[in-house]
Image (cartoon, rainbow, N blue to C red; front, side):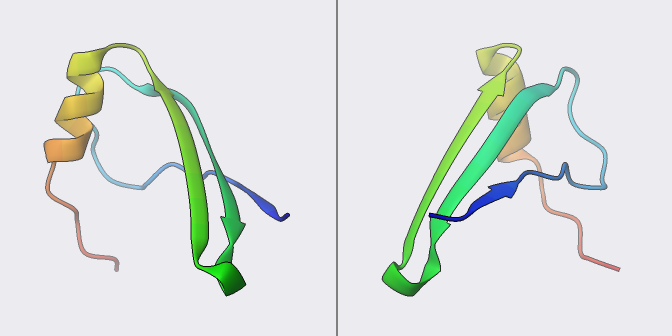
Length: 56
């Protein structure tokens, strides 16, 4: 099963940070598993609520 290393996005993040994240993908089966660890719940929710920035 392929495992891809997570690369943080290149846009401003809320106060705090993710401690780490990973992705396990089985794209031919349409299965994607993610795992992340955050400093606290507020940081996680702030990141989830943030607007995405268009790729350049």
